[in-house]
Amino acid sequence: MKKVFYDGNCPICKREIGVYKKLNQNKHIKWYNIYDDDKALKIIKKSREDCLRIFHVIDKAKVYTGIEAFFILWKDIKYFKILYFVFNFFIIKYSLNFLYKIYADYRYNKLYKKNKNKG
Image 1 (cartoon, rainbow, N blue to C red):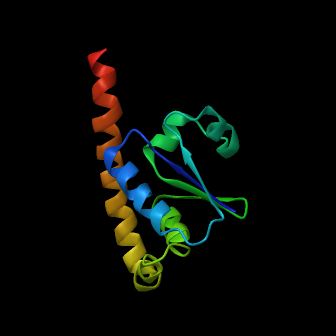
Image 2: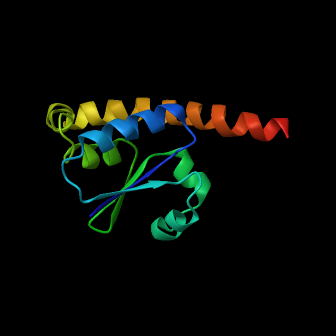
């Protein structure tokens, strides 16, 4: 069973996960909103900050992060399987991972660092 750990406080993340859930034909995916689920942190054995910074998926006891996590998830999601096959080449994955890390840092800083500095 795949376990997906996402930021339920992020509007974009929530929308995207909602699409995945709706299209999920493989009912063997467990979804965890890492923003407010302390039990999920025990399952993944990482800090909330680590999980909020980057997308995580556990499949067959292995933890995947970032673009690799998306690829592992896409393999089981209707319509997204094609993305897995189209983009699953080293240079494309490398480029996507680079861009995702930039976006993930921006998103995390916008949602969490800015709010910390105000308080």
